Length: 152
Ligand code: FES
Image 1 (spheres, rainbow, N blue to C red):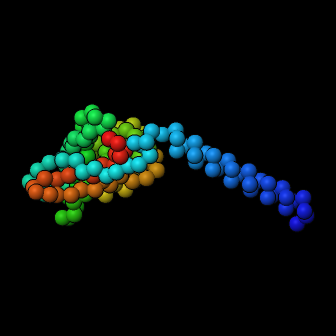
Image 2: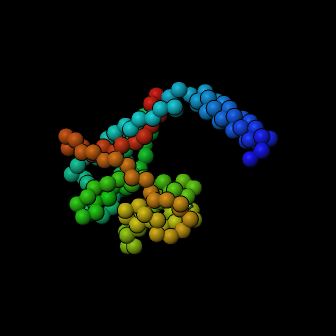
Image 3: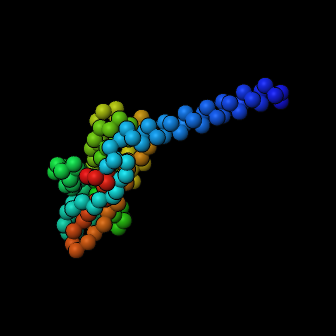
């Protein structure tokens, strides 16, 4: 390695470090403080008697975001006694998937993406599985864990 090559590589490394550092600081200040940190909030969803005995059930839960009352839907799945929740948001471009009871799969109406009841992609363009949301049962109620900005 010549002296010139060594100095060029050193200068490029230093410049890249400066650009990366400046970008990180700029990104930090571009987002409001509440969006910089996130927290999992458990939202009341249903009575535990309403949990599906087996298969898939669509449910709704409420939460507050920036002081506004919001409603979102979720699929509660009971697969051989294991209960979990799946977000209905397609991982391709964000359309809401529907559950097809006869085929026992989730189908996205936008581009035909298909998922099995574990959320795994069966076919189509989705790049990854449906998001699993935490579920907890307390005092006879079912709660869904949703990640929200800390200031929500
Ligand atoms: S948005 Fe669901 S397959 Fe494209």
